[in-house]
Amino acid sequence: MAGDSIPLLEMRGIVKQYGSVAANAGIDLTVSAGSVVGLLGENGSGKSTLMKILFGMVRADSGTMIFKGRELSGHSPRAAIGAGIGMIHQHFMLVEAMTITENVILSLGPAGRRLRKREVSRLVRETSERYGLDLDPFAVVGNLSLGRRQRVEIVKALMRGAELLILDEPTSNLSPPEVDRLLSVIRRLRAEGKAIIFISHKLGEVLEICDQIVVLRDGSVVGHSESDACTRVGLASLMVGRELDEVFERSTASPGLKLLELHNVSVPAAPGGSGLSDITFSVRSGEILAIAGIDGNGQLELAETIAGLRPAKVGTIELAGTDITNTGVADRIATGLSYIPADRIGTSLVPSMTIGENLMLRDSHRAPFSVHGWLNSSALDDNAHGAISAFGIRAPSPNISTKRLSGGNQQKIVVARELARAPKVLIAVQATWGLDPGATQFILDRLLRLRNDGAAIVYISSELEEVLALGDRIGVMFDGRIAGIMSRADADVTRIGMMMGGLETQSSVEEIRA
Image (cartoon, rainbow, N blue to C red; front, side):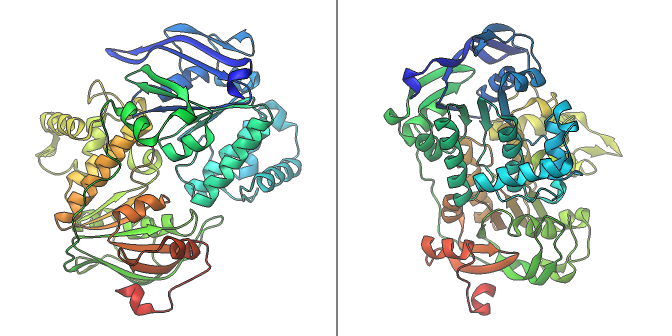
């Protein structure tokens, strides 16, 4: 296993400085062939920077890297791929207008241009079937759910035959069965002698699949151990530098008036995506409806339909007594709706804009940001400094572009902006995606506080543990339908699992509408 094999990769004394912030402060990392190394750390700890240096996306200020006995220096991502290093990024490197097959052809470089599309599609299908990834080679990427897009990245990496595979939060958008399949893939790759760097905040998965675990904090290695010697609580506390409870406090819900109502809402399916069929439910003030389901069963379509990003062809949507079925996004926001999408880069943020600009993006035309049509830079800065402090956003200044931040810190900007608007109704999809345990607990506490203040929240997540912990009522989606809704007290994991797999549905419509 890991301790007996020859190092495939050695990184020594890696330093990367951004102004006064040391993203990497002399990091050492060794990865052996046939091993899985877990790389942990809270948001902004330096994990992504270290991997970008390894993959040739960022140049280190100092330090050495030896891969397969040869030094990597000044290399590009193409050179890293050629050397046998593959990376699956948090934000997918895909062309949305192209099919899966066409994206794979692009990833193969000059070699891909010499291959027939039919041959590549056959290889994509074979790889997908072999590893249980369930992909249609001819599906357009832009019509796929985030979970399926991530599977496309996995197929690309597997078809390039990487000897060292970097997986950056690879299970963030996968259902429990899909996670199990991915872990099986990793075990198979490890058995074939390949090495894996597994970056994740899901400590249970890290302990299950990793041979060794390395923990970063503030750009330095603060822990390195065999996984057998680690615990979830110990790792979480090491990541954040303090004792961390696994359970957060929640009060009993006191639901009031209905703030969000959907009546028989249906949306046709886009190619490669899912539609909605006869969706009916309501959410009251002071209540969280948490919705579970295997990714790709209509959760994304439901959120986007409520948010106004796709039209409801049939049915009605009411927000605080106002029919918003045919209104635009701006009108829904004005009526009291906030939306935290899973795709923070594509939907929530403008990467080239600063932290401060992104934080006031939805309200730039209102006071205090707008004064007689002019932007109030002082109000913008005050708002940014307040959000950075309150949400623990790691950044040297509110004036740096958002694209320079880690994925977790980008997510904190989105959550901070949407919660600061004190919405009547909040739609949140994978709100803790890419966040470390401390930040996750912080966000869930903030959502509970918003609910206690009288908001109605629809919380959609593939994390069943989060759904059960947060929801006052638990809903399940399958094949674009609501398979069932139950109270928190009546939530049964086995029954929910059967609903997620389409093996059981509630027979009572009144139970769903309650």
